[in-house]
Image 1 (cartoon, rainbow, N blue to C red):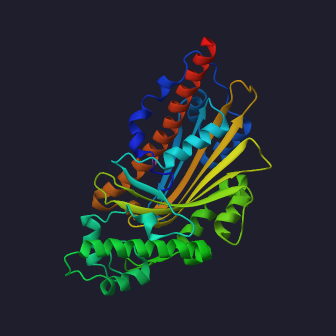
Image 2 (spheres, helix red, strand yellow):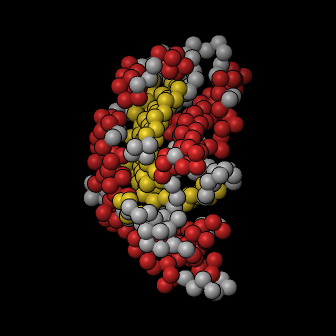
Image 3 (cartoon, rainbow, N blue to C red):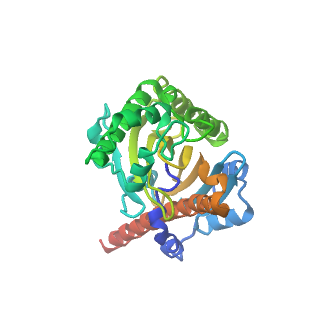
Length: 362
């Protein structure tokens, strides 16, 4: 889901992050504003800051079975300029590894079913669609969708699978178009359990419990909660869909509103927010906010601090199957954040060293 698990396929690089840093380079101390953010919002400890100042990724996570919420905060310093770091982060968002992230694409304006041409409905989802009923459905489709499925798909037809995929594409495109027109008012109520879950209510609860967004980017918060009526000058809005698969879990089709913003009042700061507006399984809502802070004290060797916040809600944290689902969720949030920031550091610092070496040769 947004930002949280995008880098799961990159776990193999996390172990090499330490080796990526130059062993002789003097690493800058954590800036005061970064320290304050991590102490007050994420409760980072002295050990966490020691890891940061040594050039490693620091990660803290919290999970709650009471409100089915998982929180992860991760930070790292990267020896690269702000623009390059944000550009590489966006590359990771769209990265398809074929194992975890199976497919990714950005919706056009207006969204069309052709935008979902690569969407696949696997055997598990077909089975869930076939048996789907209001308040008894293993695939998240919303109240209206659950009632429509039986009328829309002739399961006795030889091409029932193709018809189901076509129905799913149309349903997703319609929901994206509705969101672009009405914002949060278009968010569905998940009708897959005895107690329906309002995605709008889940999303607002996530925002209310995300103080970093309100403190560091109140204009962005207003834009995300008031979209599309509330604009944000300088921001780029995109809606993307993806399909991700994890061991022991069903493939998740997700739709995310991504906002990239450079705060005009803070030229050394950029923010990328990922607001989940649909997930076919497991997640009720998710918000990932990545803050990029550039320390340009030395223009010849800029450093960008990356602070990643993610708050997600979903039934993975119910702890079924002897707590297996909860453990999967906990490891997912921690390992994915570690891997994502680690990959950014490793690849960009390797690129920086290569450029420095080429400059010396000239």
